[in-house]
Amino acid sequence: MNIPSVSLHGLTKDFAGATVVDHLDLDIASGEFFSLLGPSGCGKTTTLRMIAGFSDPTSGTILVGGEDVTGTPPHLRDVNTVFQSYALFEHLDVRGNVGFGLRRKGIDRRTIDQRVSRMLELVELGDRAKEKPSRLSGGQRQRVALARALINEPKVLLLDEPLAALDLKLRHAMQAELKAIQREVGITFLFVTHDQDEALSMSDRVAIMNNGAIEQCGAPEDVYERPASVFAADFIGTSNLMTGTWSASCVSVAASVSIPVPGHHGPAEGDTVSLTVRPEKIWLSELTPEMFRVPGTIVATSYHGATTQYTVSIAPGLDLTVLEQNLPQMRAEDRWHPGDRVETGWLPEHTVVLR
Image (cartoon, rainbow, N blue to C red; front, top):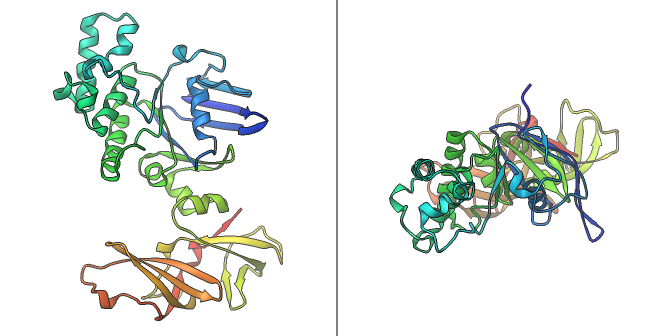
């Protein structure tokens, strides 16, 4: 039986009468890259701080490697934390920063030197060992903080929005590096972020948090392709959220638009139902017979290089967002323009009924 790296049972945190984390139950597998994703104030950082031991839960238990650490001081928990600010010691060089934790443990100098050198090679900073943090770029400082946390070989590495201070290009580069390092060392990573692209691109599993609770938890493809709730659909990516009345396996979202949802059971006749379809699942040309189709009018376009985003009106007050790939041979005049009449369509299985 594999013991989870982290287990949370009924974890709750109240602040001044308000519940910030609400009876959270969660298991994170050993060696997993797991992300807590959600907007500011949803409880994700508070959850991380309770796991780290920096904040005491109001109720519930925290297990790390099967051991109850709920009342254990932070320095005695087998976890390390990388913060957004990096919190490097400016008076120490890179080597001194990375080896700081080992020196505090009283490990002999030769072992420290060997482990620091190995860790600096892992984060590709071997040639900057004698530099002070002030002379490093944001990405290099982030890697120093990562190396300092990893060198102690914790069971779990907690990362609190560590890439948030980086510019977009560097952040994307560091996402790939961070995932590669996690695979190399095999340590469980618990990553907190509000950036959906970050969570989807790096994680083995993602938990979407809202109001202190988990709305949905699963593989990135699952939470994106099959959102479980209106919040999950709206928070991750762009969604065409629609609400209508259930009747005979269809949802009537406008007087002239009734969307089929074959094979879906649960709503009763006349129930109000929310559904969504992702913009990239909708076609404006080359529609096939098995697609659901509805006519519309282009009301706005937005060019994004590799793609063009269209806003299509399919009924008064009801617009769809459609995302189309721009083919290499496509010219500006080949794209749709405001005022063009179109027929939109998508496969029935790409309609997702939401909680």
